[in-house]
Image (cartoon, rainbow, N blue to C red; front, side, top):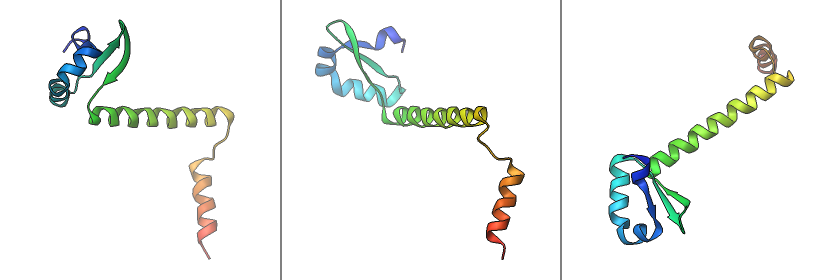
Length: 90
């Protein structure tokens, strides 16, 4: 479905909710819901939502890691393993 086809007013959502949920479940395409002519909400299937949240979490981890590296706040793998060996060897 093209994006322009998935933009619907809230009144359409109210009267066609079962159909919208069925379509979202089948094709995993979100609906943009408008109110007073402005986009206000997105309705999407739970699998797509979870995938989006996981992707955002990974991007956040990458951004935090990149910032740590830029600050020089890291340890080489060799050093980290040496420290672990010292901690766990008698």
